[in-house]
Image (tube, rainbow, N blue to C red; front, side, top):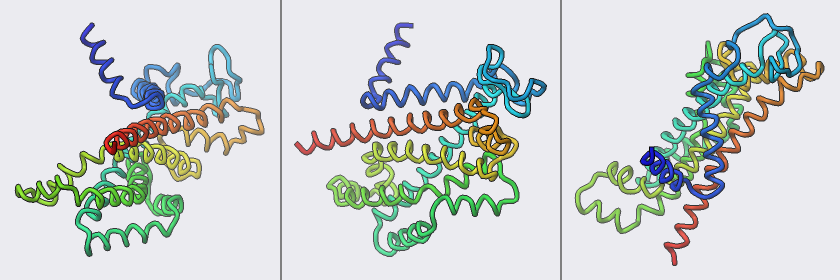
Length: 287
């Protein structure tokens, strides 16, 4: 038990700054709810038969909706979908952004120009419009395709950020040393340069996850998400379609909205904590 506490304390010390720690606490809370949702929810997600439009009470902490379903159970089950989309789409966008950014910034020349013109082409169209167009043309949308669509659209900004950093790093002495010992360009990019960019990559990852959570909620609210999965965006969409505001059913609207806000806030705090530590380390190195 004592060794577990020591390991936990050492891991906690690795989390940068007070903002990062606060964001990490929020992240862990949502991760636990996403993982243990079926065990935490008071009722099965599709259970019907309760009175409709019930206000919050001891039996239903967040009341019921127009279908006679428990809103708290919907909120807990919806955490898994929204959290999964945020993490997976953010990770996919990060992989694409890092790969294109490193290749463009390190190689330069015609390869870099072609890749950046490709990025510029897609940047002409607003990301939300691209998401809506792609989701509209798909024959069916599920959680997997939602992750794919958001991830394929979200990496463009990160590619530019990583490219500028790679261009600055490629003239470093350690890069020349790596060339002299016979390392290939791919090895230099991913074994030598990328480790130096980890703080920036992680900061971008959490920001991309934030955007993915918001994008999923937006697509689902517009009716372009997976109709068979429960998510916070779907809750807001159904509440809007059933005139929850007119019925004064704030308990169907406010909880999913706050959940989206707090999860995104947690991601942003983690990203800010990482960037603050990175800038502080760069400042100390400059001294």
